[in-house]
Image (cartoon, rainbow, N blue to C red; front, side, top):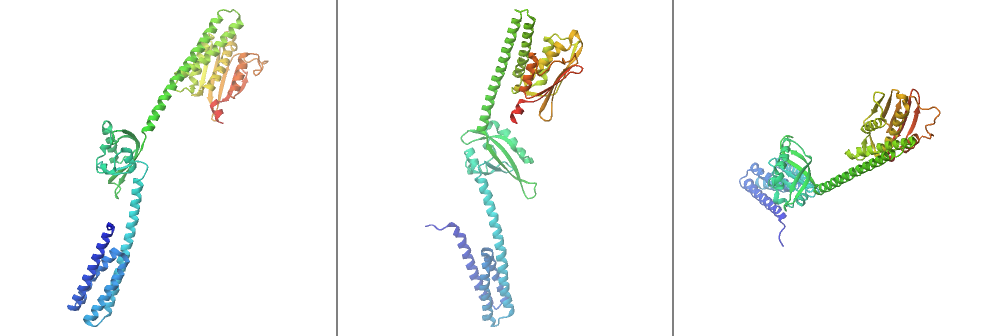
Length: 453
């Protein structure tokens, strides 16, 4: 059975201490007993006391007591007189042994705690699940934990003291080294993407963050520590999701485009149908139906041109819709002015279509009935969001006003009945005023907000 290598230093210390004590005892007898010089030889006794205190701490007291006995014995044999000075010197041996042993013990405890802390931090880095690497200001690798070994396929001993550039693919090596060079000026990485070249030639994309380590003066850079996360698979999934989203965007755009085309076909069919009838009421109904279809088709046209298929810029939409209605009813700008006061507001399609039909009906009524016999006037359309999540839609004119004998909530008019239904659909409340014209005020909440409540 082999000896434990850890015991060899201990045996060496004991041998050194034994021979030192033996030498000092012999020297004491020689100098004190034969030469008769008691003061000189006592200096040699401090050597084993100090060694024992440094190596065995407070056990040095035992050696001090033993050497004190030798000292008193030599004094007695050589002079046959033991003085108080001899006892005082012996007490001083013991005191020195105690002080040195105490200091050594405290120093050893501090070193032990420091070693435990160092071992803990070393284990923390070595066994951390996150890849950790440390390099010096010359970009030489000085630490390389196990997670980094798994990431790169290299063993730590293969890369320690090697330059960092062995870890980077040739195509991006210069760019990566330039990023690393910035750490010399104190820059710390925060989610920096740097590709890593594995030992087997595979390239992994790693997301890094770093911190600089400085010496005690707080200015001299001693090392840089960085930890990384392999995001290769995540990047692949992100690219797949982006590709899938692009496909869905194309599909949604195509859907809106086809819906718009189909609605235009229906509008064209209604237009063709109107050529085969001379009944004014039928022509009026066909024209109003075409207007309603056009207002819906215009929303899908806006959506198929938009980057956001969930919402529509309703301000821009209103301007296009009003332009279409004025052209459809041949309203002259010099006779009927229009004032559009719309904030930058986006509505989801489930709210936009009802609002579009409401505006279509109310503005159409203004153009048909508010200004008879080419009377001049103004049509106002306003849409403003409020702080409580509600929005206010207003359509007004300064024409002849709403008939006093007609209840707007219970009217035979298809247009107003449709408006009441649509207002209820978006959870709104409508008020009508007829003083110096007609004003419709509708307060509603966007459908998406109502669903989240």
